[in-house]
Length: 137
Image (cartoon, rainbow, N blue to C red; front, top):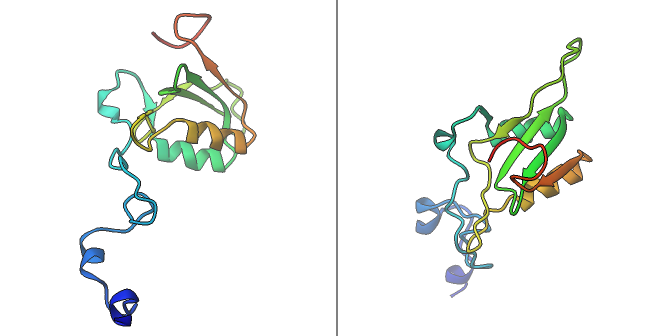
């Protein structure tokens, strides 16, 4: 009975061979809707930077500002700090491939990005499309 409840770490179980265990697919929390991999950049009609690159540059302190489009922040534009010796201001660019889009029935949400930006002390704002000077429709 003990071997069934507490299997040995020396041998992978059949389930572990089929899928990698994560907090989203394990039985402890029973999360659902974690299959979505984020925004598909091939659907965009504007230049973009992959979400992973944005994350690395955010941690490296290279992000100057982030603008999220309301209501959920499903569109976000990042302005990177200029490289040393470059006097020109960088233009905002869309955060693309892999960016989390709000899924009300799942775990994908731009609120995680807002939190990361805030935790890294990077200024940000939400803009309502159609009001004021913003990027696109």
